[in-house]
Image (cartoon, rainbow, N blue to C red; front, side):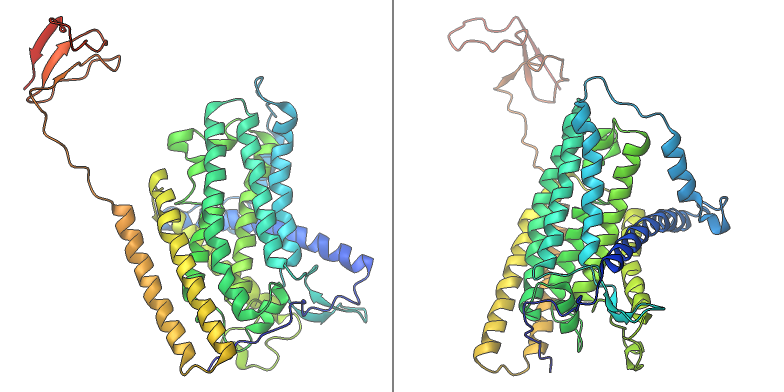
Length: 441
């Protein structure tokens, strides 16, 4: 039977031997990992979507087209940098920097592996830049700051479509960040800590994606909405808003927004791996190997788990159409948030009963309840997105209708009695309100 560990609130990682040069090397490596992961993610997305659509994808530059993303980056850097005349130039330049800086900051508290010895030295250090008591809340806070870049980009462009894209983005982040935060509460309750290293340590016996399955499903849905990716990419819907918040951007400024989007995808995927898939711990049956969770091997397991979530992003983009904005908001506020609240209350009750008394077959009950809630969530989502077709009321022949009331002529419907008032409502006391009367049908 599962016995979740109640760990101390303090992080379990030991950074006592980290010197200044060790911290600098870690920071540079994290930046390099983020940039390289972005280049590989762009290449993989184009290749995988190409296979889904029966076309080759990039295959000219480098082996298997691996240098295509680098070539696109150089091309963007060489393009002309245009700033619209109506734009607020200072905010227009700062906005992409805010979005890009915030996404890189989240990498600081992600644990990539256990404590290892740096080659050619006698220094033991965790494969993590730093950790804190509220590391997960730190990531959520930084993600919330990143949306300021999108909102300011839309506002400072001096154009209607970017402004609408920025407003959509702020509403989207508020809606789905609530559901994401609620889905993480159960992880905190089971782990006894908000430190990322402590949460990984608490998953020695079982990954939290099994007993906390509804939290895992809600987090995965919310992280797609949080990163503005298909089918939730409403802030940059090209069919409605041209290019959304970055319509007026070009050259390196556009490249920074592009980089921020993909780095955010990598960040939330790594956070999902840390919170629900055991972090850097090896999956079964590899975990039966004694050295699976020692040395630098955990880097491989962590990378493979992260790639699963990144592949899910690509799969969603290649298969699902974009939702309407009303469907998207209704799904977030009427389904995800209530489901997350109910599940959080259930987990809190079970944890309280576990502290003050014994429960027989507690873990089986939790997993069963989780499966039932996930199925109910899927059913509710299908019902909400399908909707009911509006019922058309039959036309009342006794009520006259002015076809020019809206400023342009409207064709007559069968059974309607039309009057011509030149767009002005007739007075009830007017004996001859209509200049012209016709019958439709």
